[in-house]
Structure formats: structure tokens, C-alpha cells
Image (cartoon, rainbow, N blue to C red; front, side, top):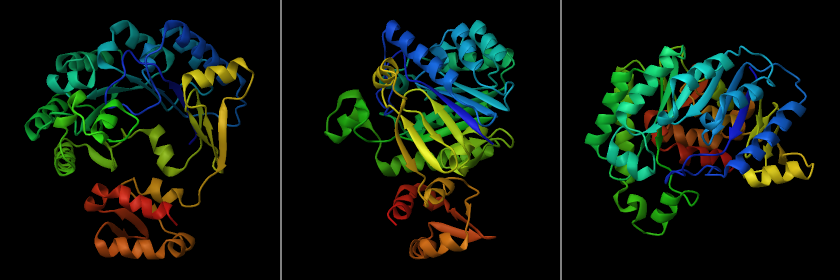
Length: 364
């Protein structure tokens, strides 16, 4: 099942935790980027008809509905099996939701992160819990019933009690899909840089420790299971039949093509990456250069560190078992991996230590 990813790397504000190649842009910059994006999609030679479309960023909900329609009209296959747009809850309106539905959007991913006002404000977001509830209601009224809600475990000031409040809101709103991410600490976000420097801005001094974050994640796994949302990937939970068809492509190594800044493509053999920033992407467009800046052969061990993210795990063939025999045996003995029915998968403990497991397979 092939798919399309479209990057719109502009936001109303840059969240403190965000480590994506996105940011706030001037209206003229966004317009020029959009024209370059249109040109890239229009010039693409389609060797297959996509079944899924995903608009991410950034905040692609910022796109004017007429521009969104111009863009999606260039992608064959409508109506697609699934078409997702990422959105900030406070940017959802009845008119916009109706236009999305008319353009073929069937699924909306809401960047909520928390339902607790003190936590929300520290990230730079502007929504409220009541506003999220209203956005969900608006989307359902527009006929968009497939909704994902993002949460982050490990935000500054987050406690077991405040986390429970967010989980209670999930139970109340009953989305079919929830993503739970553990806060990433690296130098690509303002909060990450502050934490690494030992500072206190952005609430850095109140970020929960790793053990607490792991406990918050485990509590979410249990609570979501009680709501009928099973974990099918490390960070993703869904009711049966509401898994993200598009994102499953990445973990199952199915082909997809990416358009826009920092978009990646995979054709089943090799990978391609576009220019990382919107500025570089537009500059290449101006100079008549292709948007891709890197093409490489797919690594033979990708199926391990991608497929093992899935609860279903991976089916071991003789070559994979031979190549990674030592690592597999060590992790089986340590209780981080389990094998049954010819499939290898992470245990619950292995999920919490997944980065260490993946690193071992990458190192071969």
C-alpha cells in the first residue's frame, strides 16, 4: 500500500519541546513555499496510485482551504483509503472542517499534548481542554470521525495526578486513536537545549526524571487498554480498525513519497530526503534544482529497528537471524525480546528500553 506525505513546516508558534524542522514564517515566505510545493507535486511522475495521504509539519491546518484543494487535486487516487491532516485544536472551525471533508480528508490528528492548563501554557500552546472537546465535536459534525489525540509524557511540571487528568479527558472524548510520546531531550528543541545546559527556562527544572516518565507511559498503556485502545506501536494506540494506515507504512517498509521540506521518500529499495529547512527547499526551487539533497540505499537492518516498533514484531528469516544472532540471543535472555510463532517482538520492558535495543541492531 503506497502513500504520500506532504510537509507544511509552518506554525503559529514554535513549541518549547518541538525538535522538528518547523517554525514561524512570514506570510510571503509561506506563500513562496506553497508555490514550490505545488510545483514539486505537479512535476512528480506517478508510478503508482497512492492509497493514503498525510499532511504534517508544522501546522498544515494553516493552509487556506482553497490552497489545500489545489494541492490535493494534484494527488491521484481520491477518495483515498485514508487522508490525515495535523491540526492545532484551537485552529479547528466548522467552516474549515467542512472544507477538509470536501477535499477528501478523513482523519485529523490533534496536537493536544496535555489537557492541563499549566502544562499547556509552558509549551507555548494556546488551547484549553474545553477547546479540544469543541474541536472533536466540530470534526465529528463535519463527518470526520477518525481522530487522533497526541499526548506527551514528561512535560515540565507534569505529575501522576495531572497525567490522570489528561487520561480522564481521553476517556471522556473517546477518540479512536491516541499517540503517547515520551519527551525527547536533545539539542533540537529549546527545552532540550535548556535541559542539556542545566538551565531552568521553559520549566526545564520541573521536567520529570526518566523513571517518572516511564511510569507515566506505563499508566497510559494500562488506562488506554481499559478504554479499548490497544498499543499497536510503541507510541500509538487504537481501537481495532482505527490504526493509522499511513504511518504503518513506515514501520512495515512499504513505499511512500514525500513532498516539501525535510520530507523523506522510500520506493522499496532506496531512500530520498528533501532539503531540511523551508528556506533551503525554496532556494533550490528558485535555482531550478531538485528538492532532494540525499539519496541512499535502504539499510538491510531497517526491518529490525522499524518493525520491532510494532506490537506484531517482525518475522525472522534465516538471514536476519544469522546476522543478528548474538544481539537477539542477548536480548531474549535479558527479557527485552520474546519470540513466538516465528515472530520476534519487544516485551513490555523492552518497549521502555527500545532505544538501547535498536542501537544494537544499527551497530551491526
